[in-house]
Amino acid sequence: MEEEKSFYPHYLFEIVVVIFIVLDITLLLSFLKPIELGRQINLQAVFQPKPEWYFLWLFEILKYFPGSSAVIGAVVMPVGFILMLAMIPFIDKGKRGRLKAYISMVVLVLSFVVFNILSALDI
Image (cartoon, rainbow, N blue to C red; front, side, top):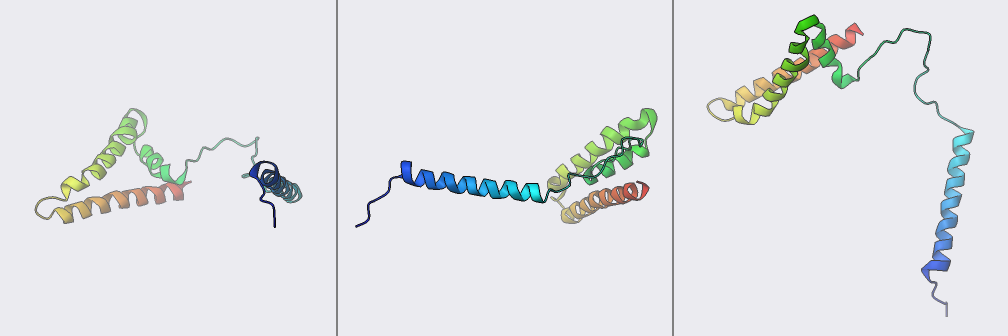
């Protein structure tokens, strides 16, 4: 009859051996076929900051409010969009509430899409 193996000396050794084999294979593959990390950077070129796609609309709004009126584009309009989004459950109540909520959601989504497209075309 087969003797029962205990975890500590037998199974632990097998697990550690498998971990080292997998680690060796992973390291070997990473050295044989390295991947490129990101895009190439030209340090001689002038730096052109570019926001991620989900901030493009905000940067586009800032273009329409230069100078001292930048507070409107940087604070007032985004907070207004957020408040409008937060108020949709309350707009939904009452007569023709669903229509008003639908229209406000369409306005929010269209403004997001339009400002993103305008910013992407400009960049």
